[in-house]
Amino acid sequence: MSSSQMSRGECGTEPGLRAHADPRVRRRGVPAPARTWAVAASAALLATALAGCGSDSEQEPSAGSPAEFKGRGPITLATGKDTTRTIQGQLDRWNKSHPDEKVTLVELPESADQQRQQFIQNAQTRSDAYTVLNLDPIWVAEFAANQWVDQLPADKFPLDKMLPAVVKTGQYFNKQYAIPYNTNAGLLFYREDLLDKAGAKPPTTWKEMKETCAKVAELPEGKGVDCYAGQFDKYEGLTVNFSEAVASAGGTVVDARGKATVDTPAAKQGLRFLAEGFKDGTFPKESSTFQEEDGRRAFQSGKLVFHRQWPYQWALAGAKDGSSKVAGKFGVAPLPGLEGPGTSSLGGLDLAVSKFAKNKATALDFIKFFSNEANARTNLKASSAAPPYTDLYDDPELRKQFPYLDTLKTSLTNATPRPAVVQYGDATAAIQESAAAALNGSTSVDAALAEMQRNLSAAIAEK
Image (cartoon, rainbow, N blue to C red; front, side, top):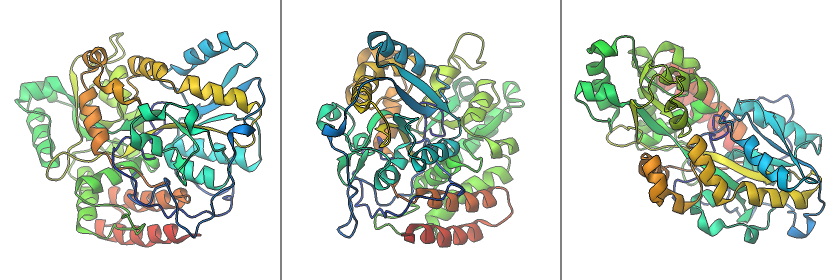
């Protein structure tokens, strides 16, 4: 969230319905509390080894078993700030029918980086304050490797009804440590009314997008409306947007062998698109500090022609209570790329059980309820959150209410899963530092990528 509003997030292997590469995830000790961790929602795609399986040289974590899910009573759900305002209603339904096993919502900060830090601090102190953890999928490998979460009984959940790649986001060594709550892919929100007046269609390339913005700028209605924004602040969202730009130019950030690959022509084209966007005014200067909600507010107030965002924006931007100036005036398309439609990163949220929690039998039953298809449907209707269940994308009623579902399914199908590297914090920090320097113009694209290649390679090599 990616990113990390409740339905973001930024999110692991989610619905880019591609098989995971053979992961070479390294396990190491618990990170120091003082360390700076850059994390997500949403979501970035260091296209590398994923957590679905591991190398022979790795030590599989000692996992919990279903028999250990004992104890009933009150529990907590720890999750990023619920900007969709949908979670408490679901908890109320559970609590009404489970008066002795009530779930208390623990809202963590909106920032994914801060969420992850608090999750880690809770684990380091072996605290039972958090029972069920709503994790960005990219964290699952780290939490499983460090034995901060329990292995879950996969056969107790309807995983066969979910998008296969989404299910894998919760796996480590081919065992299920988390259950998908929702999923995510980046989309291009655009002002349909302005494009219609400019005689333009939704762009499929970066060049077309800039040309369309030039046409809109000539309209009386286009005065004061900026072209494009994404998530460009120096946090996980920047990793997501950088990775999408590289993938949309035909490159990778980390290849299937686990090697950093940002010293390539494709990576240069991707980062150059972002850097030049600020230099030539395609991106408003203030968007250099945009996270998801900043951009949403800008789009909703009519200040942007195009906005890269997670699906949750659909419900908020379409609100007819006066909070959105663009309600009924926007559409959704796949992200544009260098020579054609681009490639999204994957986001979402996965539910896990803290190794140090009490009342784990209750926790297991609650995850079954909270992640079920009925709630996924409710979440879609209430907040346009992308569901993990395959059938919902083809449901006639839902497709009528949410005409972008076909576009979302396409984006999910073509999305690239992020690698569940245990030391993901170090890898994403390396990306953010160098990408931010290129975007603010303090270093050249070539120099930024050379530095990123060195630091990303070092992060991947950590053991």
